[in-house]
Image (cartoon, rainbow, N blue to C red; front, side, top):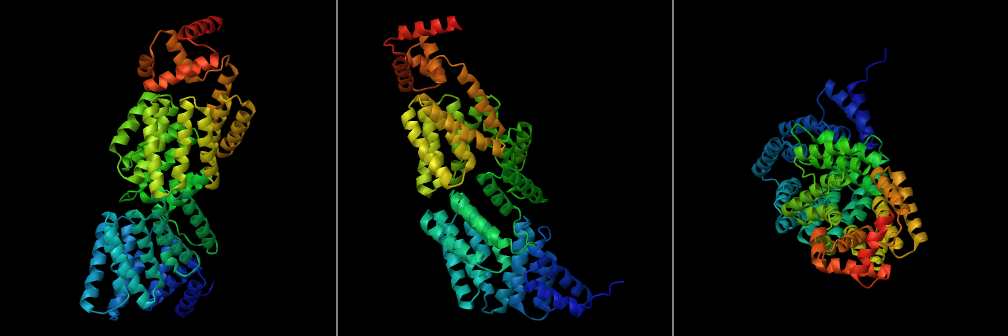
Length: 549
């Protein structure tokens, strides 16, 4: 029989394992030591921290509570307050707001009654800063975090300073000072990836920084810092840094760079952790992204189930559900859904998330003018946030608009700019979609070789990603292209048929949900391509073509 480890040996081993960042061994040995005899107060903090870093479900709650009581029994009010603070914050992250509020109120009362000037006063200002952030009061958020930074620097507490600087960065982003906010976020991320901050703080700060960058669609920075933090985490294999919301952001980065299989696995994990009880608001976001990944892969039944689940969990399933309906050929249903969502959606970040899908659906429904208005708004948000991602999305959509208006020269210019941006951002799926559009523009310009090269590159990426729906669209387009016996685009031929039916430009515009100017432009392009100078010639050509087929 293996001899039992003595309590003193277990304690020594636990402390050493903690120093070496071997979190599981630290937790196990310290728990073993506690089972034999009460720990010293600092050792309870080590136990709680190690448990937090490896156990997403328990997050060290019991150990923090025991640490609080031991500190309080020994008269160490500041450390008792610190333990209660961490207990409250962890409960808050789990969605247990009532218990969290109780522990934070207790910590504040103890601190107030003690009259002690300690660094914990800075920690206890953080909940008020979080409330200001939730209320959208960027001015108050910045002011409170400024006080916290001063306290943290006065006591030499780098964890507290980093917390507060992160809050300042979020506040600057919320107030519209995007460059200053990004600069602060960069400073914070340097601190947490260089080892200046305790592992207890790293995951929380990272999650908040990525959330801030995500809200202003700085996907390039979010991806870069995620990669840097992952490298830091690789030196600590037992570390379970990503929980709930953080796991969603990490999975989004994987989706963005094309690792869809792993992204789906992490989204399901995040949703499972967040669904509760009680359910966390972000559970619906995870479910929505599950739907997106299934839709892109052509698994429509699974996508539908995930979108419905996201709605049940409180996340509006648009524009993903509308794009699913579009993929199913239910254009009118998709159009009605995105129009309703656009009327209800407020806030720059939420609008930016909706608009690309909104534009895609309206273009499919033939409302080119409505789609163009959506692009104008998207470009305005891109300019306000300085987001390369949103600018690329706006340029891609602009290219699609020009294609709908049979302006391939202008389309190709916008699409080349979008493709360059997507490539810089490592946005592989968006780049492939843009290449498909560029292929269409090349085809309309008569550059068949250029069209083939663009589509071949897109097809290769779709195959690698498993983007089966996009592959199906390419295959269908290829089949239709083989049957083309005239130079008109699909939309131009629709217009030509209506000309042959005797409709005026105004009537054509009404029939196809276009502006009268766009209908007139289509008729002109048709005549130019066919070498005609009258509507009667167009009508005769359509009749002859139909008779021949």
